[in-house]
Image (cartoon, rainbow, N blue to C red; front, side, top):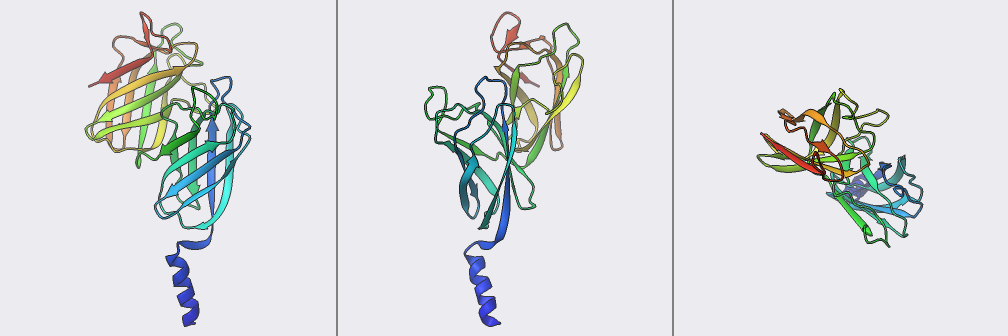
Length: 254
């Protein structure tokens, strides 16, 4: 009995346990013609106690969801970061990577710098690094204008929220299976694993890609118990190309 207990203790000290299932959900972007890839994609997951590396797959079509599971006996602890690597030259744009270890809460990683993964392209990187920003959930509530053509079917928007304690970067404003950014429509975009920024002061918006423009009236940012509403009083249209009425970047502050 004593030998068995000692063996269990030794196994625990090594960070080993019974097999745990890691579930990785990959959301590939769809607004670029070559967003998908059939090259091999490897992922490394960095935990507080251990790291694990495995083949994520080699079939990530444009505008797709893919779920991959992997069994490990390593005790990873809290997941902090991931990296993605490719062995080919295809151009791949992952939007969001979600990691769930066993029954723990999923951890969300966002491609906040709009990077594309490839070994042979001047507009891409061979290794993509993403880290968890924090433990707050931020919700962006946007009201689209009722003016003609205010809605958008194609512009891709991301945001940076600024607060008293710093800044945190969102993923793309897009709800799956919903026609977003419609004229007169109010909708929520929810982003888990955001940084605790304290009292909200500003939000900056970027139009990354797309062929049309979006006009909104108000935008409310809620992170935990903190909330702030911003008004697009100058009626600036968000679009990729800057012009007299539209901008690819705008920042609103209280």
